[in-house]
Image (tube, rainbow, N blue to C red; front, side, top):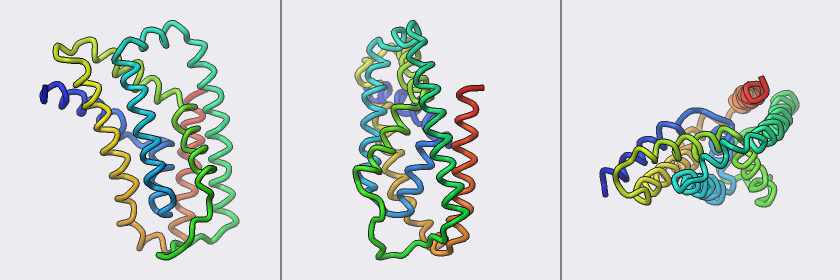
Amino acid sequence: MLHTVLQGFLVSIGLIIAIGAQNAFVLKQGLKQEHIFWICLICAMSDAILIFAGVFGFGHVVQSHTAWIDIAKYLGAMFLFLYGLQHFYQAWTKKQSLEANGKDETSLVKVLLICLAFTWLNPHVYLDTVVLIGAISTQITGDKVHFAVGASLASFIFFFSLGYGAKYLQPLFKDYRAWKVLDVGAGFLMWGIAYSLIA
């Protein structure tokens, strides 16, 4: 059982650790200390739902309905382009700094909607969790439930570590120039991923 759980964990962590739009969003919210728990929970729960869907047979369904991937691809690219544009605007117009006792500037509902968009409008998420992990699970000799649990556990550990671990970078981000660098970097990342989706 533990061997199968570990297999799922290693496969999932290897896929999720790559820097992507969702991870950059979680990192930024972790730096701002805004609604971290709920963001991490949504990201991890969404991954778990998709992982279980992939492991228990939905991978071939997604592959046979490529129109779903195409729709998600263009919606995701549009969302990432606009969100990247917002980052460039913030870098150009604002002088953000991180105050230890600062109040949340963004409502929980707005943050959660953005988080859901990063997750469910991102075709890479479907390819990694539903298709790829689903395909790998077919080669597993142990209980697939344990494999899916291990893969989901990796997602929970990763997102909560990223969200809550970001606080150790807070001293750096008391300088508004660090926020400008982060915003510019995030903007190029969003546009790069958007381009890769439609190229």
